[in-house]
Length: 304
Ligand SMILES: NC(=O)c1ccc[n+]([C@@H]2O[C@H](COP(=O)([O-])OP(=O)(O)OC[C@H]3O[C@@H](n4cnc5c(N)ncnc54)[C@H](O)[C@@H]3O)[C@@H](O)[C@H]2O)c1
Image (cartoon, rainbow, N blue to C red):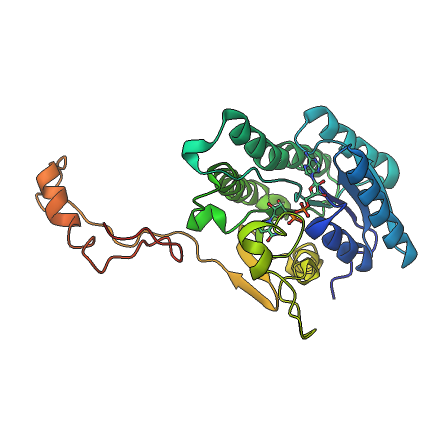
């Protein structure tokens, strides 16, 4: 089960945290892995350490440094992968960082840099991987392709202190759904994970305490290693029928999210004509009574 022998995987931001665990998981399943991380000294050192750890258990890995959202660096990542291993089969977009602020205090740069690293980071690497697979399929070659994107529950429940991050993570879902539709004819799958784990990203602030390991040494629900097996499974031949899905993953749990659907469709009682504001009020007010809780779930907007 889950044998990836001969397959080639790229994982962005794999020097630390979730990416590191995912890279090790794919390597343990037999994939040759390309560890990407940003070209900064501590990130390069971390990426190189992941490579060494993989080699230590007999796996194959190389590190390729560069900004996941930079077109030239992404092209270089693709080229280095093909030069080293002659193929690409699994593209895990994972890299990113946060710059949390409420919307009224957020600068343009805080917004742009976070949208850039997550959304553009997914875009450039998905573009390169999918173009490679399409060209290969068109030339009559067999293609094995798996796209795994990293979103966050912030995308669907809202996140009051992360307007930049939540928007980028929502865009990633939309982009991956489109890729799943487009690539189905080639047998390529594209799925989204929404992890929860204790990493550098979540080690401060609100999540630090929530995600901390239990003092009694029992199962650590927020160990990033708990997320990696799902990535290994989605990358595997056994998951060939799973595409266009969004899964929350942490601890010993995987939640398959329902696709958005209309809660209620209300037609204008006056028939085929434009709504009047009064009629909309008659039709909608009963939904938004004092018992109303936002359909967007957990972090609901209080009824005003
Ligand atoms: N940890 C969680 O609970 C959680 C929850 C939801 C989503 N996520 C997502 O999971 C992914 C991994 O996060 P993590 O928690 O492991 O964080 P992390 O900070 O431990 O790791 C992120 C990695 O990405 C790298 N990186 C940052 N910018 C980069 C760039 N421009 N190019 C290449 N690499 C870059 C960092 O150097 C680091 O190695 C992120 O996309 C994050 O948004 C994490």
